[in-house]
Length: 449
Length: 107
Image 1 (cartoon, rainbow over the protein chains, first blue to last red):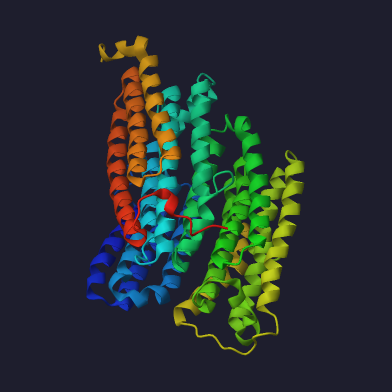
Image 2 (cartoon, each protein chain N blue to C red):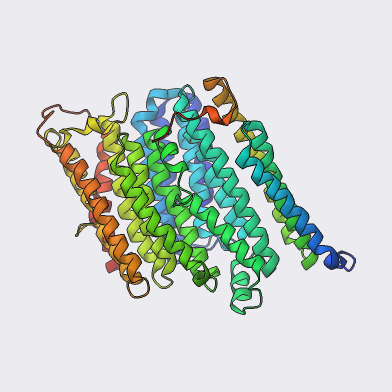
């Protein structure tokens, strides 16, 4: 709970520090604030918080893990953005400030226990992102992405709100526990409730970027900058997926069988559409956007798994987010005027760190053991194995297509052509790559605890 | 509260009005091309939600939903601010506020 306040205030202080026009100092202030937030979240149970009495935000053990992961991934995104943002010394703090405000929203969305906090978290998460996507003012692609994201995003928000109003109308409460109780007693299974749940589900599918509401993803990812894309693909997706799973595993768990068919449909179509469309892309960020649609399809298996859904989602997301951030960092290093994949030709041999990170993160994304990506997929699929066997088989076929996509990129990067051009890396980029490697290699060790 | 609870008989009426407002907004978002009209349609949808929440709040006789309405109003204001500034930025880059003008990102 204190972590939220610390992070929000750090964002504000960062904006003021930005007036000194010293991007290194801004980065230092933001990093200290994020580390303080992380520690205060980590030792949450060891001291008496002044906000302890507020019931709207409660972090259980899983929620605690998710919150720590969100703060960690934001820290990595902030480091990743440094090389890019420092070109624009005057506005560096704007990026960092907006990212931290958005992280505040993500933490609300992870720890909510009533619909007030849920709605506020969703909006505090999204509104800074609308701005971050369009922050390259002169760039017409960036402003186009921002316009598209804003209009589709606020349309989804309105649908979500109507769903919330209908759920309130049929259960009479905004508290998650009371809604769950009203549903469990079975008194309020009315058409109104079902329509409300369906509308909320549509908005959730939009926010996580799953088919049939995925169309904004590729455009927005391509139009935004690398650092913002890394943040959106990791933290925003993590928070939205967690809220989705939390809603449908606990509060709506008596309604979930009713929507299970729709979720299975979304999973299958996301997987195939994501991977097959990614095959024909030439822009790297657009390809990663389609790959993120497909990975969302995998993550949605967590919605159908009431017992271990959230824990499997955690393992899956740490593998996916670390690999994506590592690949985006490499893209940032090799990017020239455009983010065409052809830039990647032969970068693997002459730059050992880039080569190793690239191979490991692509293998993890394809789901090859012993990396974290494999354990995430294994946990998600094995739980669905007994009840939804055909869908699991389809998912495995789709992941073969995905493996082809990732291995093709690996072959391109390790080809002999274009060998020998050393790439320049900053210290922050090296740190990001090493942190991501740590996450991919060691993320699954959490299972042993 | 006694008096307020008496709307039960006409509850349907309020719900229908609210659904009508919401649908007008949604259809507007899906069919109109002018970005300012799109913003207005989204505001219309949010106000339909407000009406629905206030109706339920009086029906159940608790004020929680009315507090939610205040949250929605604040968030709608923030969204409109961000939306208008994004719109101005887009206008500077493309000299148009027609949503059809934005088709450079595709594939």
